[in-house]
Image (cartoon, rainbow, N blue to C red):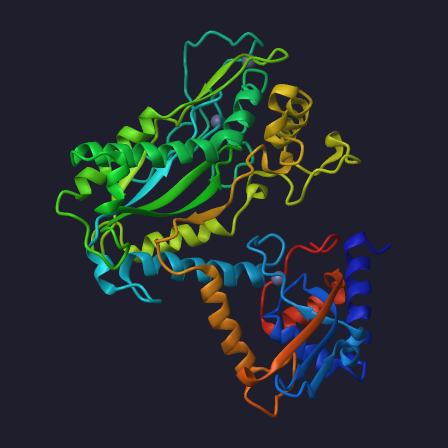
Length: 462
Ligand SMILES: [Zn+2]
Ligand SMILES: [Zn+2]
Ligand SMILES: [Zn+2]
């Protein structure tokens, strides 16, 4: 008897063959290429009219009715590799360019920015209970996880000790040694307040820099701009942490030299001070004790240079890689938890299930209502942005996208066909309607074959 996977594969192959034999296949294939191999394209219906701005005469009309199935497919542009590897790759490459431009110049940023003090900073969460972990010792050997020979058992009768040297893919990594001892409420509330901790960190950083220069904080911007680009990443224990590039510029931003007192040493001291100084308090409610949330003690500040231990290219690469990951890397969902979902049945790890359940539980307590924890349960409470940058850091993703779109439209004028006139002299009237999203398994296989882009996981196909 055929198993489920070969059944799904056979259905996908039949679906693929049917698509291939259709008369509009070449048009379909051209769109699959134009979306860059997007695995979950958005389907639009509508028209675009090009009119003479003086006379109103119709010069050209594009309608999706001539497209396969009457739909135009456009790329989803997600940053999440688990949903669409092709679009996430574009997002990663753009983020790399954006971060790199802020370190070495280019994309409209002066090359002299490379001389400004810049550091790669990691701010982590504190401990909410011992978890299985993997640490590499000097020399590359893996240290035992948490050896405690004579530790008393925890209140749940477990010895909070683990002598395993965990492999990188060990599913126990990040899972609590005693789940009953793990402070789930604390962990979820910390995730929910991480964006606020970052905001307070950035303020404390500026206050420290101002004080060091003998200025009032309000006057700092007259001489110094603190620019940053940051990404959030989940650790396996389900807590978010931040990686950031922090750079010191003059008052005009990346094109202006910072004052002489704004050194690497000042930058490092300001990070240390600000990370240790900021706190957010949450009140006691319904059995959850009052808590003070702060950064964990593992704070890392490393100077970035073009040739030293930590190069600008390496930093741009790290940040870009983290930017396409989301909470699903810790074994949670890559979508919202719906009110109809049974949390016990969700395909997630035991630890993620408890974090999700805790979000839902705390969402019912009025003191935590503003945190919208049920809505953000799949993110384990974190509702911030994954990658953000200050206005003056470098270029924007929007600008990079627009440059690429202009290039693509010149290369494959797929939407409109070649226009018989210069496009800046005309009036464009567009009407679009969203009609759906996604590809059938067969279309997905064909898209991957046509574009050479990786596939996301298809349910039922290993
Ligand atoms: Zn996509
Ligand atoms: Zn362990
Ligand atoms: Zn315990």
